[in-house]
Amino acid sequence: MSKPIVAIIGRPNVGKSTLFNRMVGKRRAVIEDFPGITRDRLYGEARWEGKIFDVVDTGGFLHDPEEEFVREIIKQVFMAVEEADIIIMMMDGESGVMALDIDLIDRLRKYDKRVLYGVNKIDGPKKEKSLLTDFYSLGIDLFPFSALNGYGYEELMDSITEHLPEVDEEKSEYPRVAIVGRPNVGKSTLVNSLLSKERMIVSSTPGTTRDAVDSVCSYYKRNYILVDTAGIRRKGKMAKTVERYSFLRTIKNIENCDVALIILDAIDGVVELDQKIAGFVTSAKKGAIIILNKWDAVTKETATADEVKKLVYDKLWFMKHVPVLTISALSKKRTSKIFPIIDRVIEECSKRISTHELNLFLRSAVSGKEPPLYRGRRVKIYYISQVKTNPPGFIIFTNKKEGIKPQYIKYLEHKLRDRFVFEGAPVDFYVRQRMHK
Image 1 (spheres, helix red, strand yellow):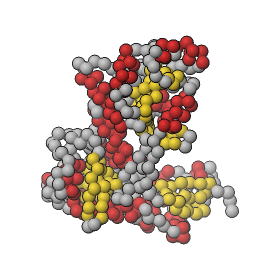
Image 2: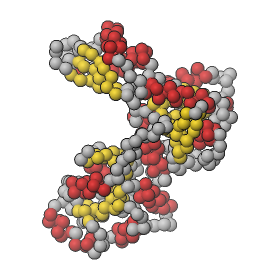
Image 3: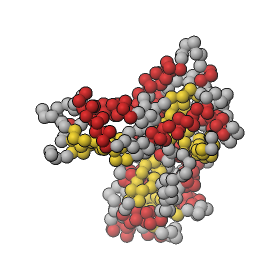
Image 4: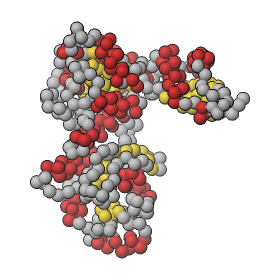
């Protein structure tokens, strides 16, 4: 299920990041009194009156085509415009209408998009009366508000949700498999190998895949949707290039997939950026498979498959439940083994354990190691049951919720996997307090 997208655009220092932070409810973007400072965390999820949508914060729109950095910002802004369902174009009530505002409004008129024109820094009726006069000459409907103190914010949000497109909640009949990894680890080569055709342009230049590409792939009469995503770069490099929006789309493709294939370069091993990408998949609670590509280039005398897998788990310690497969996308060696593992992980993600079996497991786990005392008192766990799948989620009832620490949850997860496997599947635990029987 893909959420609608709302893009916030405007010239520098009109308050885009302040509005973004208010909408997503977390401080996700950097705010500083310096043009174009928005660097990182350009997306967030917003909720209003039961509706959910993604918000994109953009760099400040400037006009200096001679400057390469400015050209990149303009590119980014209009990539956000193209992918958005609704655009909020922000202006500054205190500084009045500027030439850049007029330029941006003229450009937006060329798009068949719903645009809400917001005038920020209007923090009450008096300012609304005195500061809006200048803006009426633009001939557009205006939304006066203050991103800082919330004046007029509800009206803006009501208008956004009123015009949001209906979300198609129907799930694809085919499993969605997102192929993620840093640039140049062989993602597109792998897709080409699995499809047995040159479906995508493959280049030795990092980051050739600018956007996600969906392909339907068939293996023994079972179909899969393969999503080849743009390579995720380091934060600093994303700040100045169109990779910011490729990054957003990659995150969305991870959120919308059933299984993520995390592609690593077997020659390089696990680098810091690989850890971060694996972290995105973990945060999104998705089934996962670790693919060590370019295995044919590894000297087997110095490193066996088991030794390399151990090194992978050492670096990706939070993914020890995820299967690792060594392949060569270029020579197609072992690539056909990917599909049975995908099927297995999908099955594990949707697996349901009976309450009876779970409570037998719980008794065994607790007898092996009880929760530590909490404020000198014994912490009891009464029972456990599974409340959901995809990912599997379990609720445990206790007499002292605060006494069940993250370390103990980790212990239970480890024991749960020993008993029921859940290979490649994330698991969630929820702790609820219950009065004594």
